[in-house]
Image (tube, rainbow, N blue to C red):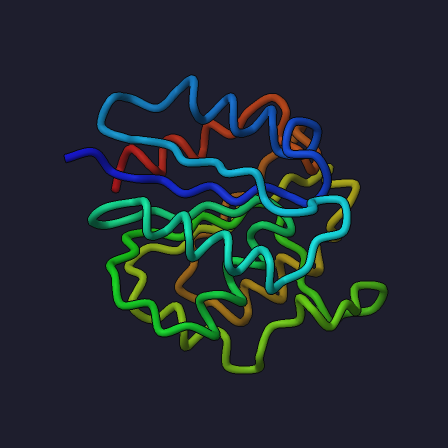
Length: 180
């Protein structure tokens, strides 16, 4: 049976924001994986409720265990979804790529701020990964440090030369994925 990967893209146009990364992952996955990368609703003016509903709909289309990936806002929405919902299915890994930490200075958007105990919703996920490029021009390094503090069991990968969008790909993610 194939392993299903649900990828939630960043805000803005999927093709412009996360498109290069999605294509890179799709081009390098072997036949044991099936990638689902749905278009999220109204990506230029995203709202948590609409994105949550889209995640729920797409999760129901992935049989068996699922691997979740979120880039930027997509990762934030996945975290909030997992914190709020009692997900009963098996999520074998969560990959968070260049994810902002909402509620910090200049990042106060109530719709995306996580509940204080959000990490409790991740307890059943066996593997958790955080990725950030040192040259990320959008999300400051402090955000990664906050996640590192909140999620001490997360495996952290810092890269150099890809910026926020990872247009050149993310070989570290593929390596981690193949090891699951």
